[in-house]
Image (cartoon, rainbow, N blue to C red; front, side, top):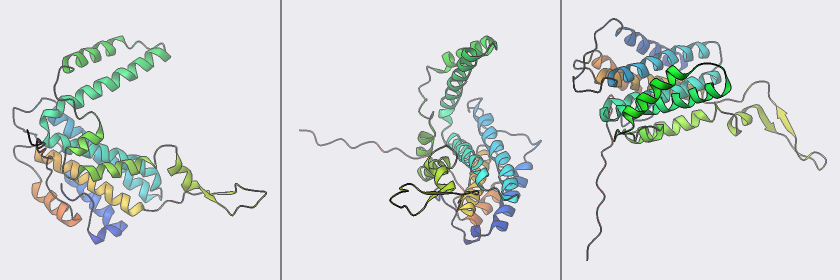
Length: 268
């Protein structure tokens, strides 16, 4: 996955992007009711985790297309952001099988925080769920592979992932309250001595880059499917996905970053 941004000129055409995404969705639907066979040495949660991330990316892609269809591309940004997270995680797991426990323990710890909040703020009995969650945390906490809990860490472990994380952070600026959202709805007007702070409030957001984000969604959908297909003993759609990557102008492979040992300084 050395190419991290679609380079094809046709990605400036919304209709072409919509058709491209829909075609990838159709390819994914061909997996339905098929038997998934992977190497027996994989962690039992490895395949389910990648499959879930890819499936969720497909679901988000369908929603993104609907929102673009009705003229609400900005409303699709949270789903594009979530697709970045799912696709990066699927890609990371596809080349870092040993990191599967890190994903599981992070999920268990997040669930514990949720259950703590429910218990502290409601009368809901969470003890059965808490007991099972604590059991899982205890079972996994001794794992040596817990380095992938954060998305940035996962991104840094795949070739080209650093740029994808930058895109994730950029998408986040459109999803969380802050300057990014405020600036789309407010513009500063010429000030006067008596009115040092004058602003114009927009009824519609000043949002640009909708085609770039749609291309990002296409890329994430492709990455998620390549990750899922690559872990199979006999990949089902390698040729179709390779052709799709060529059309988008990105790599059709996912590679793990090779850490080179640090050179030691001269010894006296």
